[in-house]
Length: 267
Image 1 (cartoon, helix red, strand yellow):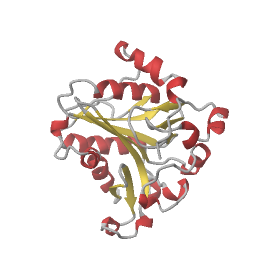
Image 2 (cartoon, helix red, strand yellow; image 1 turned 60 degrees about the vertical axis):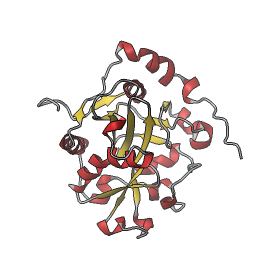
Image 3 (cartoon, one colour; image 1 turned 45 degrees about the vertical axis):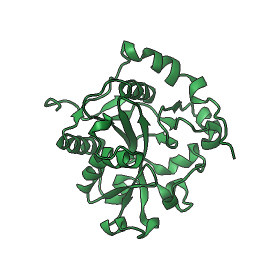
Image 4 (cartoon, one colour; image 1 turned 90 degrees about the horizontal axis):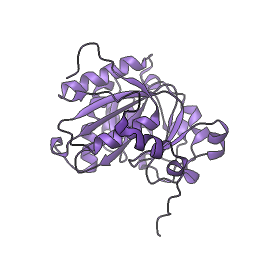
């Protein structure tokens, strides 16, 4: 459990966050570690196997000098701008009731979904790894009003022998109209997207709840529900410790890594 007065989140370089998450997931994790952070700069983060040329509007990103970071987990591209709160859980496999990919997403994002209930926002895992919000609980019924489900978080997973990482970026108050500036229409989409563009597909907690939700309030609620599960709240370091220097400097800050070409899938 965390000590009284400890912060609910830290402000962090996205490249350092990726280095810390990869390093920690490879360690001998004895109990679930939950955390939250906000980006200290605008960035575009892409999944491990994605092609930057296919998924991103590279010219705009480079003109605006926005860094691109390739994470070690799967999933799709996300945009880190003001109003995004990042969260994650690093968990020993034996702690999970369902060790499959879908079960891991459900269990290790459940604290976020429960926190959202405090603002009458019903959240569910949609597609493979999204968190989607509905304007009423009835939308959770199977097959009901898929067009009403809108994405509030993109999540991804990294599975190692020692631990499983599930992390995501929660749209609290972000300007989702900016996403089209940096992201092309994705090459792979969940069925509930229904061909919607970024702005009509994504929403924020503030938009769907109709109330102002400061990031610190949301982070505190997520922490509360994590600790109710007996998960330890452990914030990432804000400066690079020695054991992360190689990953941080030579991988996650490297353009060769972030923009590496991915071999197309064989037809």
